[in-house]
Image (cartoon, rainbow, N blue to C red; front, top):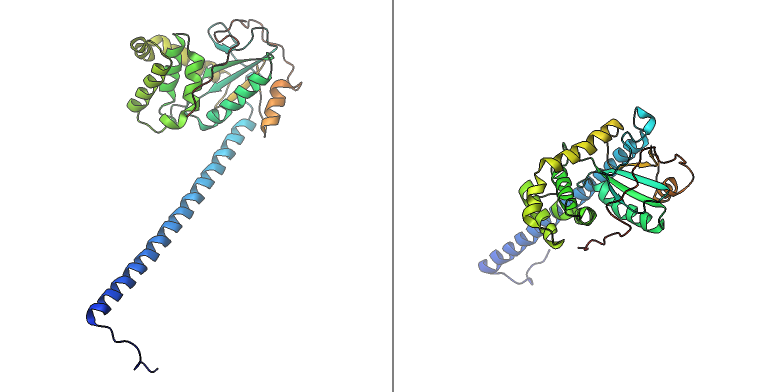
Length: 272
């Protein structure tokens, strides 16, 4: 090849050209690594989502052993109840505030409750999965402490709606966040913090957990309609049909108390 007409570069120009080529090569490698990392993380997240869904579905499709899937402890006056005392359908949820599936079901249950037009009363019982959700017990205590000041459902809604704010925090930081929510709800903060660590609050949560264990549940959310465990729903429509439809006709259990601490008003949590 004839190179007699090509411009001759000086040593300085050749060094600068090599530096530019080196920078370009580094940029290409960095971009390639970033792209591969992005693909790997997306694959991992997708796999975890699929695994989580399959595990949850498996848990839902496995009816509780013993007691024929019946609510072990009837709804009583110590329960947190939202809705009309005359509602023909009682929906009981055993939930964990740090459980992502429970947070996903929260707006679904709220919407179903609103659209039922007084046909459903909703009961929430604590079932914190302490071994896998380190802040579940703490947030249950926060909800119960708020309940002692008449604001259980308001705190319940805030905790679920803002789960992503506190779920990954340390216990100390999560507790500070609960105090922030109590401030928003204009609660007595000194009393709130004392109640969070009180035996009364802990005993209430332990009683809910014990009743869930007696009903042989092992996952959250677990739902009972008029005392009967429901499972196998694969969509929102099927869930609503099981709650509102004629699939379950069991009458409310004898001994159910028809008292409500939530009235018929559904608080609207402040959105993020």
